[in-house]
Length: 415
Image 1 (tube, helix red, strand yellow):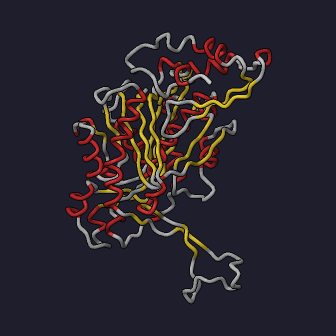
Image 2 (spheres, rainbow, N blue to C red):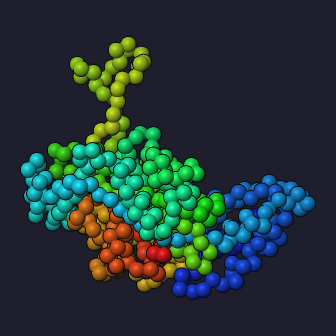
Image 3 (cartoon, one colour):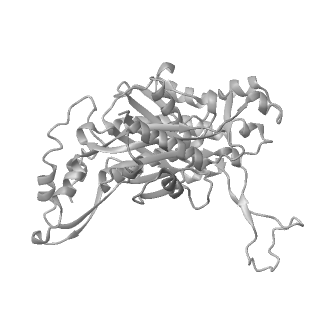
């Protein structure tokens, strides 16, 4: 089969710099596809993590007279772009300072701030819940984008700590008033979740014909932190952030390149495993001896090897950003802002140094919120947009990394 990367190079995953106008490179794609696929009844396109600018098609060979490719479908594949048009965020009301933590664990403000860059974090309390934060952030994103909830086609809730084990996205859909019952589901990828959500939304828009996709990153890591462990409890906070992605003409495309990976071998370095509850006598053996009925179970507190996570992040993230830039046809001087998952000041500084990005081009609000997992990127983006730091047309190199281990990068333009 012909190399479809050459044919569909303008699919929005790999393309020329945004400063350049669309070229005729995209225009002849429909007749070329018809000519190349003259014996295809069906073309199914899919993306593969790590090789994003390749599109693999599975085909069923039929005679040319049975060709069923639809002109509008081909046109959408080639000519549809997507862009970010709105953002929003929400945080709990309770602020917990380093001095507050010093009252419950052996630490102090200087020890925490020097090692992490964090001074405060927000924690859910009282009647607050994560779904409520996600709803508030989503409403703000829709308001900025001037999109009515009834026009939302898809909601992606990126979270590993939702209020319901079976997912929260449908409840968000109901609360927003999305009358047409659009698809809504959860994505679990910890601190990389929001990047996975952006990529998923891009695929739904470019290949599925969706118009408005709401991507939410929200986590309440305070729920799974051991508050007696000063090595981990000092790092995390709760928050939600959201963006509205919208279909557009390929000439306005604002999602230029992705690079996504996972490595299960490193999972042991950052886990919150599901464990079986012990019986009253401390035994883990079933009363019947047969293992049935199952005993109660729950998730353990988060366990992290900080040294290994640091080494992992500073090694893979610069490589991932460079790969995403390459797929987008950009160089390291072609983006305005570096926006990293807000994990730790030392990690952010080390990655920026390796990429030779000066501190004034790094977006960070880590000091005020700590590590908010999947919420950290959209939360920082929203604050940067609303403060006027990030303006329309600015290009951002964003990267998430964390449990799984998972990591990924995206090159995008704000509006």
